[in-house]
Amino acid sequence: MSFQQRFEAASPWEQELVLILQDRGWLAAAFGQAQIPEEMRRHLATWEDEYGRPTLLRWAPDIIAVHPSTGRICLIDAKTDDKPTENYAVEVHAVDAGAAIVQHLFTPVYYVWRSGTLTPEVVLNRWHRRLDGRKSRGSKTSFYLVDKSFAVKGSTVFGNTNP
Image: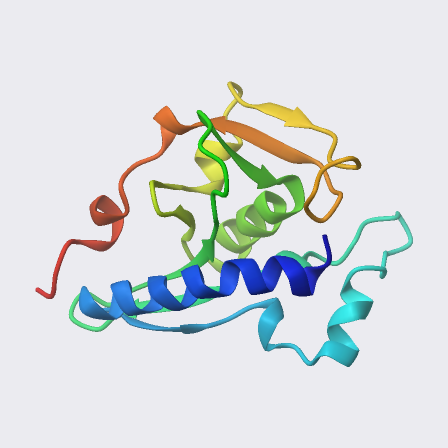
């Protein structure tokens, strides 16, 4: 499935999530790969450094959010579930990008589905399986399967309503 096809499927949830955050008192806006012009974005899928590693810019989170009254800031990777399963799937490169942002940019990152929220630290814990994604429907990259019991509700992280 191409980036454009995945983006079209995910875009409504990203837009809804921005509105949910705004209803809870956050300033929220689009961020990440979707903001990069198409003629540049297609190169993100093929570029590698001298060690064969892709640019992690391709997996930058989708939303930037700031809570004005608390000063909290975070980046959010909006995720969609199209099938009910007991696991979330998170691409290894998305987790690598999130962990790098947390470690080097000192900014929290959350992976947010309608049914739960994870952090890179939770995804990287030793209990989750890493699977080869070459035959998957997504971006054809490896991914982690994370049992949904490890997730917390979005309201725990982002609050329920305006303060």
